[in-house]
Structure formats: structure tokens, C-alpha cells
Image 1 (cartoon, one colour):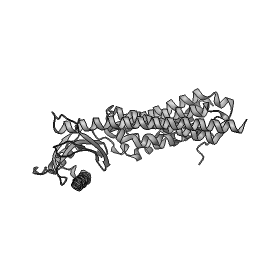
Image 2: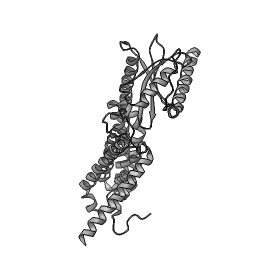
Image 3: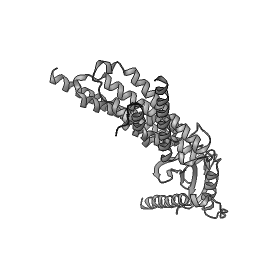
Image 4: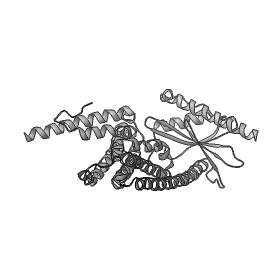
Length: 194
Length: 166
């Protein structure tokens, strides 16, 4: 599937599509923050290992070790979440491990090929912060649209506004609206430049 | 590059990774123990506010039933977490040998209409309880309540049968 039509950059849209498994499950602020933190830690661990492991191990071994490292970090995050709020853990633990298999984390596990790729580590880290923030914001927005309020306490969501946004379909509607808005903004910016 | 160096590095990394995985396993076991204590305390204090003494927690994760609290000399208590589209209803329920609810206490804030209605329906299903008045929400909650009651009954029957076998 080609997203890039020559006018809108494919990278950000592909990344949002790659994050879809997390965005689908992020239907409240607390769940979004938990999944965002889990994603960021797994992403950072994978990226750091792929960058720091010796290149002589070979790309498959670096990928395997980085992915294992990300899974271990996801497990530690789940343990911390369990200590913090057992009820939130019960709702989120399966999804925390899903973060390891999202496209940005799998991409971070690949060993950087060139020196310029290695020098973009900080940029990759900032993208990770952005993805984590997006996951948390998606949770807050979906909670607001579904219940009419945003609660920091998991399980304390009350009220009904547009309940479909609490369902997985709500995430896809939101992604489609965000992608459309992004495309319109990019077109408007490029139009004003020409 | 020497092939033996690569093999040695791979083995060192694999050993380090195995140690980290083992440490993560210990962390998980510790978190599980702490969470069990927290959940057992929440459930037993909800049913008997002045409850003292050690309560054993068993994680079940069967439908809406999260786990069971066993306390010597008292009926078994189950922690119910029933999820509905806009939130979740948490309650501690003590049951008798056939799984019928003896007492049910919601945990925490149960401010919305669904939570209040679920509390009424579960309490109304208990032994000797007055039948709850009908509500327009009942149709959407009926399946959830029925499933949870059936799960509670099956789990409690299983537990008492296992105890009898011992």
C-alpha cells in the first residue's frame, strides 16, 4: 500500500498505522499513560541495544537481543504497574506486551547501518516521546468523547456522551480524522509556500 | 574479525540476557505477591470493615471474576470486576457453598447509573434478597450479570468439591 502521494509525507502516517494496536486499546487517560510509558521504555531499550551492541554480532543477533531486551523491559514495566495499581494492571497487562510488537519498536530493534543513522539516535528518542504522548492523548480524547469527562483514576469513568469512542472502532475513527486533518494541514502549508 | 570473538560475545550477551530475564521473573513474582495482598485486603475489608487476620488470595481471571479471598472460618469471598462500555464495576461478594451471593459490597466510587444498577442486580440475586425493580438498563446488563453469577457458582462448586476431596 502506498500512502505517499508525493504531497503528503508517508513517515508519520505509517508510524500512526504502526501504533494502531496500542491506540485501539488506549481508551482512557490512565490506560493511555500506562501504554505510552510501556511503549516508550520498550522503544528506548530496543533502540539503545541496537545502537550499542557490537556490529560484529551481525544484524540478526542484534535484532534478536534488542527485541528480547524490549520484552524484558515491558515485563518490568508490567510489574511496576502491578505494584502501582493492580486493577489497572489487570486491564492493561496483555496490552503492555503488545507494545513490543508495534512497528516503531520493531524498527528500533534494527541495527543502524550508517554513521548518519547512528547520529540520529536523539531524533529517534524524540520520536519515541512523541509516539508515547500520542498514545496517552488518544486515551484522553477517546475517554472525553465517550464519557464527556477525563479522569486520572482508572475505573472511575462515568457518564455517556459518544460510547462508540470507547470501543475499538472509535480508535479507527479518530485515526482517520487525525490523518485527514494532518493531510489538510500539510496541503495548506505547501499551498501557502508555492 | 575473528569468528571465535563473535561466538564468545554472543554467549556472554546470551548469559547476561538470561540473568536479566531471571531478575525480571523475580520482580514479577514480587509484584504479584504485593498485588495479591492489596486485592485480598480490599475485598476482605469491604465485606467486614474491621476484618483482621491473614487472607489468602487466589488469582482466577475467569470472566468477570478476578480472584478469591479465603479466610479461615468465613465464607469464601470473590472479587468481581465487571467491565461495561463506559467503565467497570468492582465489588467484593461473599458466597455460600453453592455459589449464591450472601453479601455484595461495591468497591470504591460507583457513581454512574450502570454501576448502581449492577450493584442492585447482583445484590438482588443473593439469597433471601428482595427482587430489584426493573430498569431500562437491565436488558444491556442481563448477560453480564448472568455470566458472572454462573461463573461464581461454578468456581465455588469447584472449590468446595476440591476441599471435600481433600
